Each structure stands twice: as structure tokens, then as C-alpha cells.
Amino acid sequence: MSSFSWLPTLNKEYGLEISPSAIRSFGDGHIHQTFLIETKSAKLILQRFNNLVFRFPERISQNHAILIDQIKSEELPYILPLPIPNLAGELFTFIDEAYFRISPFVSGKCVNEIENPHLAYLAAKAFALFIKAGIHIPASEFQEAIPGFHDLELRYNQLLEALKNTKRILSGELKELVEFYLGQKDLVDQYLSWKEKLPLRLTHSDTKINNLIFADDFSKVNAVIDLDTLMAGYVYYDFGDLVRTVACTEGEGSKDWEKINVDNAKYNALLEGFLEVGNGVFTEEEINSLSFGGLMMTCIMGFRFLADYLKGNIYYTIHYEEQNLHRAKNQMYLLKGLRELVK
Image (cartoon, rainbow, N blue to C red; front, side, top):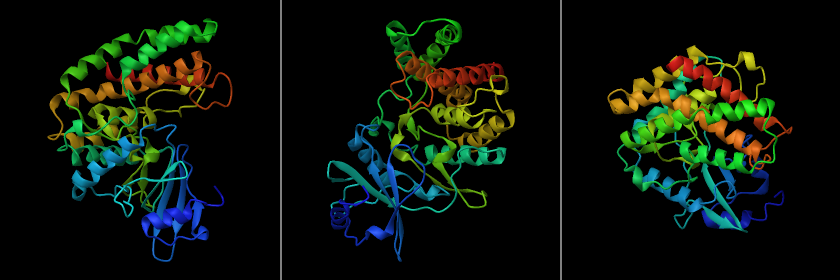
């Protein structure tokens, strides 16, 4: 990659004259290779797309094209840095067996966690505004970027399959976790019930705090980023993922079990931000479903972490053998806290 052998073709496809000296690695993303292009006239983001994680780049390209064409961007107080078409009008450029894309650079700050509940409020408001700005677009137009990504029934069945085929010995801590997560079947039933009642919407589907660019002084959101997961979903998906990743007293990797619970101030700030946008826009049932979102998104990650441990840690990157087990245990404590909060 250091030779940028693909650069001459990239320049030709976009009508640019980028030199290797204008390109440097950028950010700490784990999926795509990301570079900052900095010339005298412009700053751009260049990505070499990871089609091992996202196996259907054509779906993502189509989803982005719909968004570029139809979203009411004038209603958004921030930027959506969607890909810039090449000279052929395509959002991806295929060079040397790899997909590349260029998008606008947005200045500001990304953070992986927050202490201030006001930032939680700003984050929730930003993601709710994204749903609102695309609420007029028929959700059926969007393709699944990652099939079954937020399907709780599917993830429960995958856990059952992993349990059936595991080579792990079911005792102690592992036995306790398996029994706990098998006991969450009522959430699967609630998920299936909500599917019957709720309309599908355009959702971001990966509403982590580091998928926002804040202003340097953290007074506002400058951009919503990482739009590869956008697809048809339920409003509570986006609220729930925020709850799981923002409103926990400890990070996902914490093993301070007694400290893991719901941060009520952040939870209430998330709810305030989402409702400020959603009241009068989302249906009454969508509003009522929000509290289920935190339960469901925490449970689904617990299912996935535990299933991966049972299968021998084949999906998530680990730094020690029991890490996925401990991630599942972390989510168990958060889920217990959320059940107490919303009962």
C-alpha cells in the first residue's frame, strides 16, 4: 500500500492530480483503510473499502445513491459526508481487486466515550434527525448492507447452534452465562411482536458515539459518519445502540462487574434528545418501543459475544482467550440494569 500503485488510476477516474505526498493515513477505524488527502485547494477522505466485512458493496452504493438523491439534507444541522461520484458517476471505483471511494473531509473531534450527559443529548438528537430527514423515503428501497444484522431471533438461534456444537465445557462462569442468555427468550418474543406493529424506517444502524464528528468545542454535531450500515430498520435500533454504548457506567471491555450498570443521567439525556425530534414525527408505538431498544441491542451483543466464544473466537478480535466470554458477562450486567430501569 505504501507505493500507492493504484493512485494513477484513481486520479484518472476522478479527474484529479493527487500526489503521493498529499496522502497520509487517517483515524483509527478498524474496518476500512482510511487516508486524508490534503492539497492546497481541498481536503478529502479516501477509503480502501473492506469487502470482507461488507460483502455486498453494490448494496451500500445503491443505498448511498438513494440517500444522495432523496434525503432532505436541508433539514439537517450537520453534514452527511457521502461519497463523491467519479467521472463515470459511480460511488465506488474498482482498482487492483479493491474498491475505493472519496468523500468530503469534515473537521472536528471524534471521541470513543463521553462523560457529559449533554453530549449524549446532542448525539441522540443528531441520529434522530437523520431518521426524520429520510422518513419520507420508502424503507423498502434500501438493501440490507449486512443481512440479519439486528435480527434478535436469528442471533438467538445462532447461539443455540453454537451451544449445540461447542467444544467448551459448560461449567462455572460459562454455564451461568449460557443459562442467563437462554433465559432472555422473552426479549426475542417481544422483538417478534414489535416487528408486527412498527413501520420500517431508514436507520443508521450503528449509532456509536464515535460515528459522530463534534465541533472542536463540543457545542454541536458537525457530521454523522460511517453510513455503510444504513438500511431499513426500526427506530428503536438506533436509540438502543446509543443506550448500549453511551449509557453504561463502564466500557464494553470492563471486568469491574460490580460497577457495571446504567448511567441514568446519560440514559435520560439520550431519551430527551430522541424525543425532542421524534414526538409528532414517529408513531406512538415507535415512541413506546424506545425503552425496548436498549434491552434488545444489549441482548443481541451478549448473544453474539457468547456464541463467538462457544465457537472458538472466530469472529471478534480478542487479546486473551476468555475476552468474548467476559464481553458477554459485561453485557449481562448492563442488561440486568436496563431491565430494572424499564420494568
